[in-house]
Length: 207
Image (tube, rainbow, N blue to C red; front, side, top):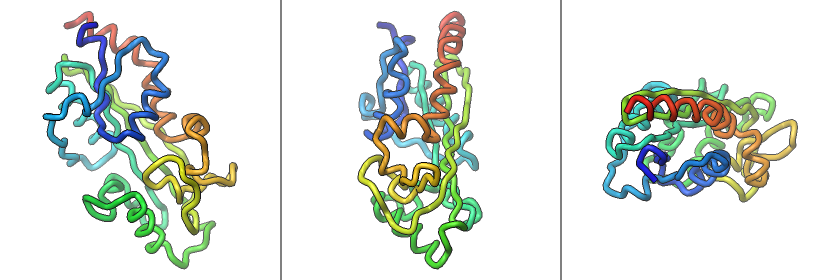
């Protein structure tokens, strides 16, 4: 299999890797991750939008590996906090904070705010880049509320406090299969999946 038939998913997060490959697995592509390239350093996310960060990561990883690269940048935007934590979601409680610590900090900041005023949205931008420098970016969004306390054991990140009103469950109470139907990342990945064949074909023709 040539390097042009492989896509490097720009993450070392096992949960994120499982979600991405579960949705894209029907594609006849070999998926790698940054776990396969341990010498690649962390990419500095200095963009001001999810799309900018995803595009930068995909292009840098593609250049360093000589392969197609898929990168995402995602986060939680809370209306009552003027859109925060946003692009800083993973660093919201400090660089080495746990998911639980991030959730607890957010709950503290929303203390006293009624459930109906805790509107939030998960946003995900995904970029696919080719070794020739081509790149495409798509976005997906999932709206909900921040719950009053954590619930559920599935997922990762802010999933235990992200409530889906129509289902009456937090994202962490959904099975992986249920989450992959409605999540922000799933919606963005389905967009990428549709454009992937043409993107790979046109890039390989120009190599």
